[in-house]
Image (tube, rainbow, N blue to C red; front, side, top):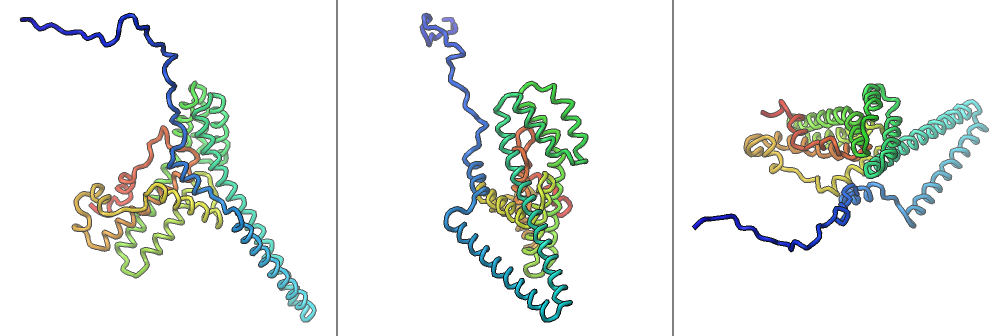
Length: 326
C-alpha cells in the first residue's frame, strides 16, 4: 500500500477571496497605556476646590500681616532713629527685590518643566501624524536645544539627514537617536555616580542615619541634574514638583521594592550570605538610587523611549557598582 499526501479542502472553491480592504483596521498602539495615564494624572494633579481657596487666603492674609508689620516698624524706626531707619528700609527693599527675582526664577523653572511635558506629549502625537507634523515637531525640538553647545553637532547632523526620511515615525526615531542619545549618556552617568556614592557611604560609614541623609541628598541632587541635562531648570518649587512626579512614577510603576531577589541575578549568588550586612545594605541602597534615577530620566525626557532602548536596571546597576564588588 502506497502512502500519498492527503489534501483537505477547508473552504469551498466557489467562495470568493477576501480583499485586503475588507480586513479590520490595525489597532492603534501609540496611545498611552493605562499605567502611563496613571503616572501623568498623578504627576500633573493640582489642588482643586475649597482646599486651594483656603491655602490661597491663608497665604494672602499672612503676607498682608507681615507687610503691614514691616512697614509700621520701618516708619516708626525712621521717626526715632532716622539713619538706622533708612538702613533697615533699604535692607527691606533689597529683600523684596530678591524675593521678586526668586519668584521670577521659580516661574521660569516651572514654565520650563511644563514645556518639557508639552514636548513629550507633542512628540507622542507626532508619531501617529503625518510627515509635516513630524517635521514641525522635530524643528520645535531642535529649537528647544538651540542654545546647547554640546548638541550643535547633533542638530547639524539631524538637519542634514531629516530630508532622507519620508515617514513620521522614522523621522521621530531619527530625532531621538541624534538629539537625546547624548543626553541619555550624561543622565546615566549621573545615576551611576549617585548610586556609587550612596552604596559607598552606606557600606563604609558606620554612623547612624548617614546612609539616609546621603541617599536623600544624592537623590535630590541627581534629580535636579537630570532635569538640567534634558533641558529643565532647577529651582525650589520646580525641584519639589519634579521630585513629586518622580515619586509618583515610582509608586505607579511599582518600582519601590528591591532586595536580594534583584541583586542575586545581577551580582551572582546570594548577596546577603556572601557580603557583610553593611555591604548588603549599601548594594540595596545603590539599587534604590538607580531606580529613582531611571524614573527621573523617564519623567524629565522630552520624548518617550522608542528607537532607543530603555535603560535596564540590572545593566545600570552593574556599571555603577563596577569595582565595588567582584
